[in-house]
Length: 245
Length: 323
Image 1: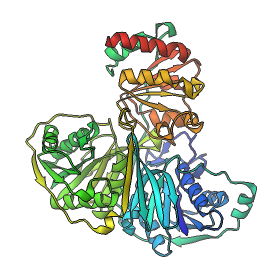
Image 2: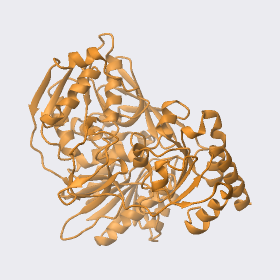
Image 3: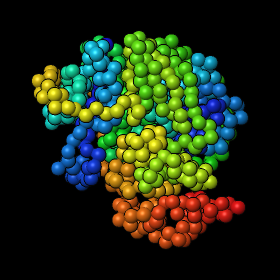
Image 4: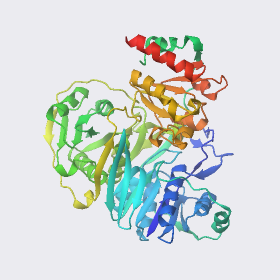
């Protein structure tokens, strides 16, 4: 079994988000980059499914050479090899196209990624790859089992879940619950340095969207404090002043 | 040119977020002087379909195919794209729901359309540009995104636009596009849904609690408060990590991002990752015994006090208020 895991290079979750060039660019100065936390869940599940010699896990990233430390981290967690598609990702459409084109060159049984990236929050890549490859895509899953031919998947829905089976190739985007994120151990970190990391060139495709400007949320006014003994007053304020209940 | 909106049904019914998507799509159609068509897939009765006219749909395409009774991402996307072609739609609107997140990207690829998901405002159409504001960096920022393709797909965040009545007479038309067998290979075996609970992603009111509650056995009062308000329940990451509550209730940067009208945070200190997921809530109430908790800095109302004393008082007051 061959599993492909798509990983995204994103700012650490504690990053304070600021912008430069008249709010047109994300300010990367001093920012620590990590494997997108949801992609880490996908990677951890892929490694579990391949444990005991049942298969191999390849990670793929669309990025410039600056993302290689993040790719090495994925190798340290336990991926067998990696591919970097050499381009600055423009939008999800571009990224998904590159991944799909790469996936066509190798015979993967399952493709996994995270439910969304924590930078642009598009949960777009998985379903787009599915469409480019004309295979089923299951977005936002919280459980994945595979018996060698058929996958059984829990998909998140509002207020519950759907249990889905798929036979044949598919792509799924993973949310919390799919696996506990694995932490690299010393052996993993040492071996990651020598695991294969192949670089392939990106292919051209029309650009359909671009970010023109960023905004940060407007600051809120000062908090209105209510003494604990008058807690009941809060209900009146929410009803009469805020008009939300 | 026309605008097409996908109206997602759950057990044959439409939720508020669907009426919101229709209202939003109607506002775009008005801006472009074009008509709004809705497309429904699954078994919805004629009266419910006609009701979409209430929010501005002038035509409803009804796909009542037994093979599409349950959600199949690949086939549903193909049907919606076929409807877009039939109606010469240049804008396609969906709710940014769990299903919407799976459909919008596939439709976008099929139609070579630019996609904005997590839209929070009406598109700005200036100087021939098509700009849509969306959430980015998990609620820490917004990105104004330009779509340069002929066809555009927008997935609208719940509670971002509101439901607006705009009565029109809606005609209902049967639509039976051909379904490829290969689009039906993912099969729904079972649907497990708690019917007595309000779903969190599109809830208008949310009561959330954190480690300050000390243990899962203390959630009774949170559920009671939420029940009285008609609110969904949520929690912080440490709480779902400790299995006190299910992952599906975890809001924050690595959980789900929500934008309800009211978010009540009880015993949650307000780490930056948590704030990211809830900062677009319209009104935030924070109850915490630590006056230095960072959450108070972004709150509209705050109570410095012990949750075990404050929450019962709120429950009493709500009962009296409703009484």
